[in-house]
Image (cartoon, rainbow, N blue to C red; front, side):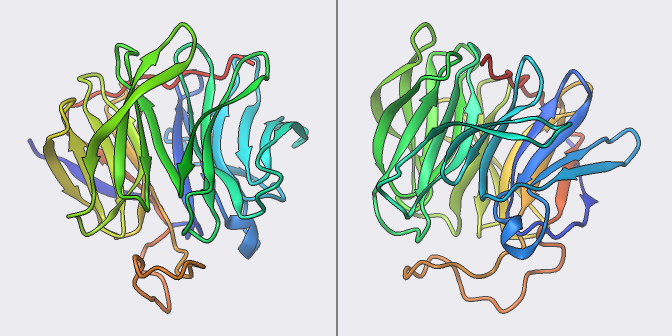
Length: 304
């Protein structure tokens, strides 16, 4: 099948992440996780019907954003969970996370189909297993559900809500867990796939309506589609190597949006990232893939 990759917006996001399609408004949201470090906006919105964009700035690193059923958004920021109002731009703290671990900050996150927001943390130096995975319930209770993590990425669920997928970028593993949709509990953690033999590392993920898992391979520059049994079904090479996350959008949820990063400096002592002096051409852009004939699943809103 013929497909097309296009650069939708050449915006140079420092760390573009977390594309999120708003089915109610027909618009795409995403974050620039460390944009504020270089004086750029943190939250972005794109309307494909008009080509218009909007953006908002917050004085924190942003790990993830989810829309709320009652309006506004819930944010996983460096220091914890917050509510955000797009009109007033007001931030309201829900709970701080890992206050005793200064290097830990919240990173990738998503909402399950009962409206719970899951977000995991990352070591800002990208080295130590000091971080946890957290669940924010609709009553704003925070529960730690896993730990021993270096860099949380790619949380998502199977279409039948029975399996939860989650990756640690620098442990080079994507895990699957049994998932209890009634309680939000995870159990029976096992290795689903590994990037140890790949040129890239696991970053953001999503699941399509066929139950296949899509992952954006940062450094490797490929989208990989895994079958539910962990086999690689296809690879799609992207125009830039540092892609960061993937999600479905469009009126029929059959367009694929891919974020990327222009950031070249990393604080870690590991050698996973080759030293760069400047970003690749078009790094930090927003990309769209059309023509694959594969549909995604609507992203739920946070119920709190």
